[in-house]
Every structure is written in structure tokens, then in C-alpha cells.
Image (cartoon, rainbow, N blue to C red; front, side, top):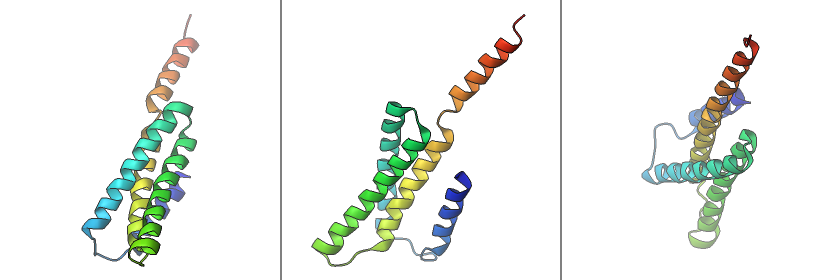
Length: 122
């Protein structure tokens, strides 16, 4: 699963507009990462489930990006900006993926140490 997500992220970066980056897209990336980080921390603290926390946090950041662009596109300016929505989603994906990699490592290591002590107990 992690390999698929990594390939998807690399694909999105390679398909994006070559070297053109806008300041607004950077802000969208940061907001997507912030929404995703907060959601991941909250869901993981309540459920202790990495998979559920990943999908909820990525989904909420994607929903926020889509909702903002839908609002801008249909109500304010009449232009749906795909690059801003993609930036928000990639910010959420990168934060969710990073949290997913590093969450739960200590607990797993501690559990392995406890099992090793139990195995070698005379």
C-alpha cells in the first residue's frame, strides 16, 4: 500500500506544471498538510488505528480542497482551479503518509522487547 501511494505521489509531481509554482499553491499545500495533520492526530488518538487515521485525514484534506475550489469556481469567480485543489490534496497526502510511517514505532519496539524478555526468562 505504501508503495502504491508513493508511486501516486511521484506521478502527480511529474505530471504537474513543469517548474511553475505559485505562492498560492504553496499556501494550499500548507493548509492541506495542516488539516491532515490535525485530523490524523485526533483520529489516531481516538481509535489507535493507523489505516483509519490515514484515510480520514487524507479524505478530509481532499474534501476541504475540493469544497474551497467548488466555492471559488461556482460562486465567486467562475473558474475551478485544478492546481489549487491538487496542491491541497498533495499537502494532505504528504502529511498523512508521513504520520502513517512514523506512528506506532515505539509501541511495536517496546512490545518486541517485552516478548524477548519473556522468551529468555529462566
